Image (tube, rainbow, N blue to C red; front, side):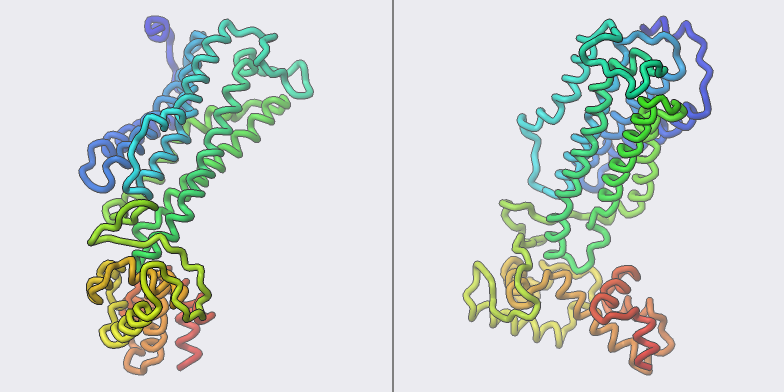
Length: 403
């Protein structure tokens, strides 16, 4: 196959140059992720593998559009598309579950890609009347090639897989979001919002690919193909990773997954805040009612006198050390008595502090942003959203109204 590829004159189209730029950028990022000494190294290597697979598929697509008479067996390489979803899923688990380890049972996630490649090789040579070929919809004279129609099952699988895995990742991120709120008072650097965005990008790209596929099978034109969208994935990933890289070093995930033992320095509980915010009956598992009430009184006194919430990076482990109690006891007390997560509990005090500072005449020269920072918030977005959520108006409006 190599001599045949070399013997052909290759004239790169503009779209091929764009895809090659994405491959070059993606390859550099994949190498950096695999070698980077910072962050979650196992997760970084998994993401590097995802980028590498995307690069291979994109490179195969360039060969598909630039080289004539490729052997039909070459298209088996497109079965790698079925690995996009699994590697995204494992990357999410490695980030959100510090105790996650590879097991032999996880290999079943890779089987669809292997089965797709073997199925394609079994179908060769391609025949229009093959059992797995799909005729064009509503138009027997459509221009879809026998190759396209014969790969109908494979193309359908390549669209279903990212949908299933992207939804799976979004489902994993929901409990993770709840757990980090039990440990952190500021979650901007650990909320994995970018991974949620990446999942939605996969979903949106797949939805567009499905629409394009339907249009093609209805013989409405072939100016755009699903393969082109998938070939652009390395470029999209590179853009997202470039943006995320600005905050990569600040992420230090220490949230324990269910079943893990809490660590002494960075501990958080898995107890959900099910109680009503107005409830004052402790709903704790490991403390008696009297012990929980006593801890709650100590916590209230500490918050009023020492104001630990003014520390922007405050974590529950730090506050627990200050009170000389296990972090999970403190978390259960806040959950059970206040009916709040640690994140909501601390930010409630910050909002009250900000409201006081905004109306103080001595702070008239300070901007709203400065007030938020003094109250313990480390970002404008969190300050504004928390303030408006609790007081119903923006900080600026509150200041002008109370002046």
